[in-house]
Every structure is written in structure tokens, then in C-alpha cells.
Image 1 (spheres, rainbow, N blue to C red):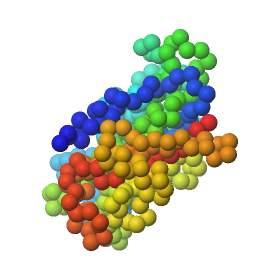
Image 2: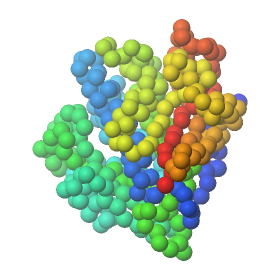
Image 3: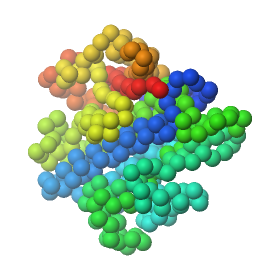
Image 4: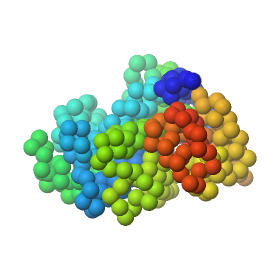
Length: 357
């Protein structure tokens, strides 16, 4: 059986060109809005429903030296680890944390534009700071979004850290920024700006890459590590106990966190063998897509749909069992219709959908 890593490598080698002269697609600025909303949703879910939840239960803290101390990653470390996974996939899009007041000097701005962008989003956090830059024969779109202190954990860590150049942060303050970098057209392309259209297949890949990276960090470095060491367990009914949510629940909570943004971006888990009946395929496209990615998990199953004059794009990506915990949960759950999953099996799909302009 081909490994999960091999499948992922092939998947991203087969992605279409990031941007081209299109009549219909996703503007670069909206694409970074999509990406940032997914990054923010994952970090908020981790901060509030993992770190703060376990702190309220007096179960486990988050700390900078999480590996040595058998604790949780700090929210900033969670985001940084996820971005490193996504950035190594060769899909073109990259993102990272940075700050005017970094604990780690490697998170300082790397150019004058980045420094100016951080200053601007600190003063005006309601919109990103964006620009177009030529690099290596292509145009790139870069956007800096404010990195806001969403939990007391973020504030306490920065205010008490011996290396912090700023020690008076409050919850809700802008602590830095998240920069997102997208490849656009070649240098010969004209009229390249934030309205430049990207292929919807590519934008869906960007969104899925963030989702998959977040879930990988949560499953491997939170759930698996803490369960293997006998520190904490994950379980379905986690809310009122000293327990972690399941990896599938992490994605579902992120999907809920993104809804208030009202960007027209949606994602959810679906399966031919769902534990929750609500996750069954809702229509013929979802049924066919799940059957397709189960047999051919290299590329997503996609569809363009028109409703009146509006056009929508949908993509179903394989939901692969990347950890033993995923396998054991489904095989041992009384409500599971399939109990013979193995590591690296396709367990279902992740449906990503949005409107095309």
C-alpha cells in the first residue's frame, strides 16, 4: 500500500497552474481572506476549546517547552508548526507568523513592506495590508492580517516572557501579523493586482492545505503524544471533562468558527461510513465524490455548479486516517458502520465549497 506521505506528494505535484488569465475565478485578495479565515478558525478552536478548556478543568497547561514538560503547545506554536507543514508541500502558497515585538527573532519582519504592513494592521486591524511584488520571474500577492490575542494564554505568555520586548498586552490587542504569500502570473502578465483571478481548484487546494496541516498537528502532536504518554485521553463527549476533543471534532469546530466571517467559504466532513448520520453524503455529487476519492485519493473530486447567474465550486478531498487514534475510534465506536479501518485508509472526505466570481 502506498504511504500517506507518497499520496500527498503526488497530490501536490498534480496541482494546476496557480493563476492565469481567467474569466471566472477567485480574486487574489478574496483567496487570502479565505486562507486567513481558516488559519484563524483553527487557532481560535485550539486556543479556546483545547488550551482554555483544559485550563478550566485544571487538567493541563500550555507551555513553551511543551515537549520536555509534557504540556500543550502554545497557540502561536500550534500555528507555526502548522504553517511549516503546509509550506513544505510545494503548492506555492505560504504563510507564517511575524511581529514587531517577537519572542523569537526569526519572527521579525524580513522587509520594509512587512514592517510597514505590521505597523498598519496594528493601527487598522479591520483590513489586511496588501501589495504585489516581483520575485523569481513571477508576480506575488502578499497580505498581512492582524494577529490578535484571542485568549489570556497568549497575553500571559508574552507579558511574562523574559525575551518579550513588550509586556503590556491585553486580550484583543494586535500582537503581530500573519503574512500570506500567493504566486500570481508571470512577469509578462499585465494588469496584475489584488483582483487578479486564481483558478478555483488552486484556491481550494490552499484552503485544504491549511485544514489538513492544522488537523495533522492536532492529531499527532496533541492527541497522539498525550495519549501515548498516558497524560490525557480524547473522547467524543469532551466538553465537561478533562479530555481532548477528537481530531474530527477539531475540524468540525473550525468549520463553525468560520461561519461568522460570511465569506461564502464552507467546509465539512462527509463519509460513506459516518458515525454521525449528519455526515452522510447529502446528494449525488457527494456520493460520487466519496466513492471516487476512496479509490483514487491522489486528487480531489470537483464540480462547478450554476444557480441562476451564480457559479459555485466544490471539491471533495480524501480524509485519510493519519493516526492510530482515528482508526481505533471508528473501529471501536458502537455507532460506526465500518470497523476494519487501517492506518492510511480513506475514511471519508473533506468537502470545500465557495462561490466563483
